Image 1 (spheres, rainbow, N blue to C red):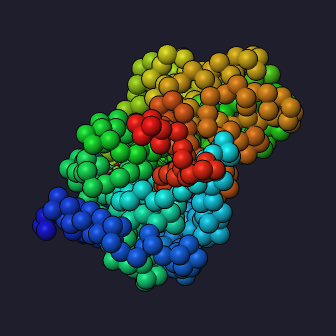
Image 2: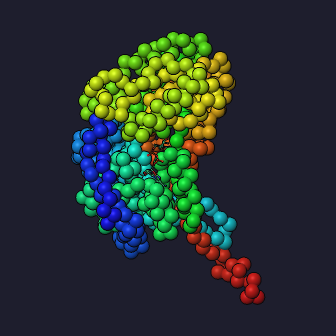
Length: 481
Ligand code: NAD
């Protein structure tokens, strides 16, 4: 036991929600040993697929049965408005298990290609072994469930390391999974910081795969640690996503959708559209309408159903955002609204920050290039669709994009040219379990969700049978003749 504890803070008012034991290196090592034993000798990877499906379904049902409690806990711990956790995070977490349960058996069937007449192949999709899931604080339960549903259904043993800022719903998930009856060691949550225990989990030779979602800086460290003994990695990293609003768009829809695309979850979304490019003919109207509505967003306690925006996750995160805002001002970017702490006395104890809009940021400015991960957006002008594509692609990240236009053909042509793993046309933030999600370039590699996301947690083996008529393949003659 480390004897160390971490205080879990409610970012709405700085109060302590819980004081939790932090796992030591020894405890992380023991969790790996139990996971290893469960995989190498336990029943989980050996159960029939239909039996495993029953367990996965039970986990989804377990989440739904506790939906209200989980939504409240998630909102208290992250500060996200209860409306978001109630209607998005929690039902989508349950759905991730339900969807995988209904589909993974089909995904595991691999047709082997036909070979020459004298040979036949069989392809086997197998679990990898012990899989470590490392997740961030912005969607603590949802991202854990995206990963855990696939990793468990595939037959792996799983160790989940939530962010030490937001472990509460992950610990509830562990209880739900235990109540569903999964064998010992198949699913363990480690409440710990990243630098020591996270590093140890990733570096350990007994771990076969690491599925990481988080920042680019930590992602690079994970690549370094995992190189010590070469293991499968998937990386879902940051973004600086672009939204392109063409002159023929329905302006009201584009404004409302764009507000969601940057201010949901206080802008702490990997897919946040933090760069909005608007065609010159409608630029002034878009900017005015957007800024007017941004200023009306209701900030408040995360448990209040009227709240539209909560606080940032921590004081440190708010300082980071303030720092970006100062840099943007110094670089001469025009501040249209926000950029300050709210004046409302009720919000003083929390880590609140006003929705912030900048206009006409230069392409080489910090605010154009770096992920802020807060409620800060730049709105720039473009003349032609080609210019919009060039601006959108002028980023090291390539996670997601939006296009707002009534012309579907034009939107499709633009979408083909944009560097991003997911492109929403006339909408934002629609994630489907059926569709793979994941970025390119500095936004990482590998997919979550869908068949492709599920298959990330498997390895593909081929078995080749000799079928030569006389039972004597070529190798028989090489040394034997
Ligand atoms: P972070 O990188 O600081 O932390 C992510 C996780 O890594 C946490 O669990 C943390 O404890 C752990 N960690 C930290 N240092 C570690 C180390 N040295 N070794 C092992 N683990 C370590 O990210 P964050 O601040 O929690 O989340 C915000 C970031 O996550 C943003 O950059 C955002 O874009 C990204 N994100 C990406 C996606 C996606 O799907 N692409 C989704 C959500 C968030």
